Amino acid sequence: VQLQASGGGLVQPGGSLRLPCAASGSISSISAMGWYRQAPGKQRELVAIIIRGGRTTYADSVKGRSTISRDAAKNTVYLEMNSLKPEDTAVYYCNAVNLLRPYWGQGTQVTVSS
Image (cartoon, rainbow, N blue to C red):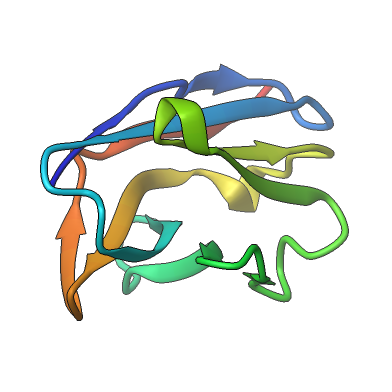
C-alpha cells in the first residue's frame, strides 16, 4: 500500500484546509484510513479515522470542526478542518490499515499562524 498525502501549508487562524490522501497498490483489504499528526516535542496522535462501512472517529480536539470523508472511486480520503487554531500546527500523516498492518504516507506540514 502506498499513500500519497498533500494539502498542507500555511493557514491563518480561523482558516480552513483540506488534506487529501490517495491510496494505491494492494488496497482491496484496507479496513481503515485516517490522519494523525505530530507537533514538535509531542507524540503522534490520531486526528480522524474512517473505517470500512463509513463510521468515523475524531479526536476531541478537532471534533465539530473537522470532517473526514472518502471517495471510493478515487481511493482517496479527505480531511477537512475548519476554524484552525495555532495548536493545530503539526506534521500530518496519512494512515491506512491493511490486513491489520499499518501503512504511513509522508508527512505534510500544516502551520497555523498569522
